[in-house]
Image (cartoon, rainbow, N blue to C red; front, side, top):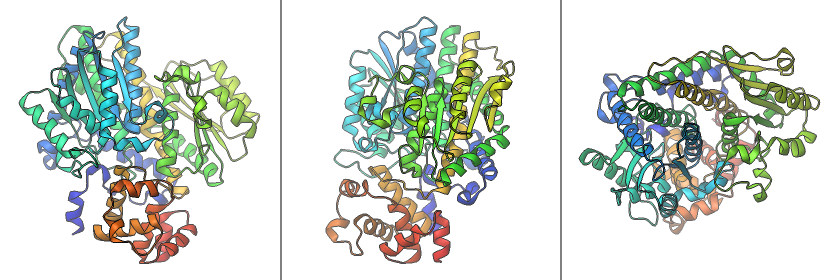
Length: 588
């Protein structure tokens, strides 16, 4: 029965057998597990995955699809003033949409062309900095926001990103694109087979996500005005956390497609599969370069974990795009890994909102959680640093080392727990007086990237894009996983997708029937042992309104199911253990 159930679980929600025991792994073991897990992104097709629905990133079908999408992007880029490329998603997918759009607009501007990339994220620009997950369930809102950013455009390439093929916000946008094929080319990007797209009808809407995805697929076969791009990249290291491997794969796919389009545009030739494959190989090389730093990464993970275990804080201070990636990671710690306070994990960006460059401009007036400049750190955080806080500076060899050194010295005067992640070419070196300020340094050295198919500028941009990937590829994932290990995860369920995932996780890890898992979840939500028929049959939106303000609901339901105990007893057992596995093993 469990084997049959596993076949029905979306790949993005499955447990990865490679990372069994993740919650008890040491920092060095953690890095090793992540290395093995991330390598699955670049797996090749074999006989077991040869079916069209199960193609990997390097599969011929995937390469062909990416080439076709890049060709559509090239058409848009030939007339950027009147056309647009729109990237959209929820949570991490939306933040990556922003990051990629910003990066390639800069490439266009540096080449003397008009920017034509834009982004849409559920929850608006606030969602780039803090979690705003409630709007992810609203397909009409998604279509409305897409309409607003494309109303004056003649041709639009729309890429809707949802790793699990499940987000209603994106479904509404894809539905809008399908209704206007003369203007829109729709691309659905995710990492599940079509057969495992979410089949539950979106509450208050006319379709399920699966029905929209089926229409995308059918249109791609009949008219080639839409594309379903869904390579398999393996299960997540942390079950269901698609902001990890799914986020990395999203970035690889998007940047490969657009780099191939820009390369063809500059050379005046058609997009070729060989160029797409070459880009993918470059990203695979990034994996090897990154994990060559495993010993220093593990040391830094240990330092950060010690701070968090002692109720300290973790602060990222970044420059440029690497700082933006750090900010994205920090925004995702509370909803996913249980950071209980906005200051548990914070990121601050050199240049603040001017560097960030979001549509709404400076939104710091909305609250303290939106303070993000280095000056904000100096004013609000630095005077309060304790011996248990860890500060990590993230910069490249291109940044002003004197400026970095002055900032590091200021921090070092308050706390000895300051480390660095540095990205530099083989020709760039850190000054000795700067290196001596850091307790641990993770230095990633990038070799010269050669490609006879790209002109000099694209080589530089490709190298720049790959440098950005490093943070999301390993280090910040290791940090957030350590948070999950050392502090009980309090993954808040705040939307339809989270509720369904919670039910799936309970069924998977307890072996109980879906009906019993739902009952246990509702018992914990409403803090009662008896669930009325009215409550059982209520819309998910009603449950979400209640659960959004509660903590540890999913872990409590899991313990209650496995130990066959009351909600009160399950909460007591969890309060005595910081790791879920410890609590369950103690009970059993």
